[in-house]
Amino acid sequence: MNQLQRITISPDQIENQKITLTSEQYHYLIRVLRLQKSDRFIAMNGQGQWWLAKLLGQQAEIIEPIAIHTELPISVTLIIALPKNGFDEVVKQITELGVTKIIPVISDRTILKPSPQKIDRWRRIANEAAEQSERQIVPEIREPIPFKNSFSLVNQPKYICYARGNSPHLLNYLIPPSNTAITIATGPEGGWTEKEIQEAIAAEFQTVSLGKRILTATLAPIVALSLVTATTEMGSIK
Amino acid sequence: MNQLQRITISPDQIENQKITLTSEQYHYLIRVLRLQKSDRFIAMNGQGQWWLAKLLGQQAEIIEPIAIHTELPISVTLIIALPKNGFDEVVKQITELGVTKIIPVISDRTILKPSPQKIDRWRRIANEAAEQSERQIVPEIREPIPFKNSFSLVNQPKYICYARGNSPHLLNYLIPPSNTAITIATGPEGGWTEKEIQEAIAAEFQTVSLGKRILTATLAPIVALSLVTATTEMGSIK
Image (cartoon, rainbow over all chains, first blue to last red; front, side, top):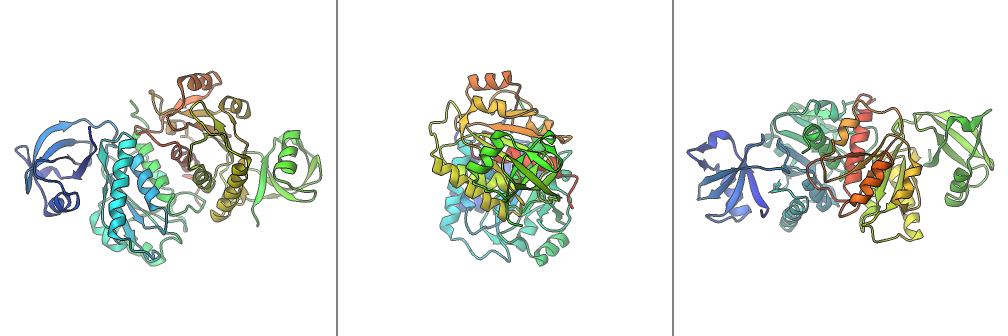
């Protein structure tokens, strides 16, 4: 199966084998991914159900449910403060590891605002990495936005990795594994500012640690995601 | 504190505040690391005790016990089949993550035998990464050897990550965390051969999985080590 693009839908969008797309999903499929009528994509509900769908227009038709063997049963969103270098490799590796959605963000200590060409390149990298790791689905990569703007895009549980401070280790929150979508935010070189941490806490993020050593901005998302995938799959290898 | 080199010793090497070095340790300190008499290094027993020591010759003098805050309490050895590219970054990242000892190996599907200059470069990278991640100790990097030759260098528990097959997930063996040294072997691009897996099993390695997706040779050691460090530290963040 070629790698298909995927969107996450909510069950109430489905009626009579048709999906009524939200305007944001429509925009994403038509303008960002440049799908055309009759093109196929995968719809998922973020909790282990996937359908093959065909784009009709503002709606899509469900062709059939599909079995996905290489995907995580839960939706995992990583909010990643853009590092100065190395984000290409991050995209590749977190795609291999099974990420669902990538939200690159501009933080107080992030200097660069990436060009549109970079985003296209990241999507290409994600496509190739999905194929190489035998994933059937390509993770969604959103346009970079200010960190605060990402808060409204994600639901509980939400974690923010904070190197300093005395937060509990992320792993404590992953056992037993969640059966719902999970979001984890990782910071830039130099870390999150105190203000960003407070804003995230006010938006109900839980601060967590990734261990006693300082991890670089490009390593933290990989470590966080490794823990999520392992705890999710530790009991279910086939 | 400058980053000091470290060797692992066994308790029976210590008597009257002096360490009698094995010939292999002596060779490593004098010829590989080029320490001189009176140079300081760290001796550890791989189970949470560290001492600052001064090289005298065939012996070393214990100066004092030291408190290490950024190291794992257990010794973690990674046997890594050398990938064609990208091992520099692997060294950097697993150093950040807290690896104790790195044994690069030549496997059936590894084509390149690295030059001595590469090994010097890896040691330099490990030094810098240890400093950046605020580790007080530099991991030991051994000369590359054939995979089978690594078997005699490591003790139980020993795990070999095997992408195919139905092995239990590594995480199952890490909870509750070990209080002894742990060794994990990860394979090359293309994976271990069936023969290598059988030889490892005969040498009492336990085959384990790192999840449902195929991980590249440069990502597997990072994932494996992330799980070890997280399970070791999840209850002890200060």
